[in-house]
Image 1 (spheres, rainbow, N blue to C red):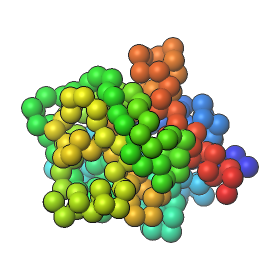
Image 2: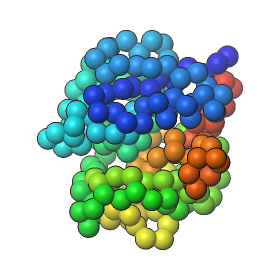
Image 3: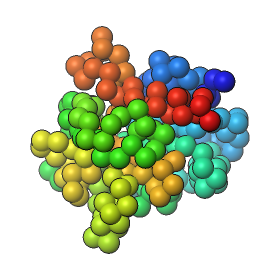
Length: 226
């Protein structure tokens, strides 16, 4: 079996091709999906890539949430389809209600672009199954609205239920509550992460190494074994 993983392209997506390449390097088959189509082409999982969907008008991810493709993503995520939202994709997941909380302007109101140390908190998701709890990795961040916020009740629930998948180590790049870099839903099939694992999959490109490849290889391994 070959794992077929769809990557949705919205107007303003920047990292859709990078996500497709990461999937290919992980042994999966990337499938290009268009924001205006309901048909997800029978894929086994979906990635919502980084960028500035619909120009980030209103709020980042607020318009993309209503794209025809997202109606199908929301429906199938409820049935267990694995979904990964990266940066802008994380914002879309929060806007769509698939994940709680919101991503707001960075606390210092500056765009941040750098390699970032993270610690993996939870591996209870196919997207993080290739890691070990407590494992430190380096993944690039590049965002202007990466400040994760939520009510105290939501934050306590995320921590109490083990749904924080990664935290920032060292200086928090955007002011996210409790250093949260990524979260998952209760079922574990939907994950949102603000750093860009698709930019850390080849040792010859950039300085972050290949730590990001695990997000994709873990999923492929899980799908093939199912």
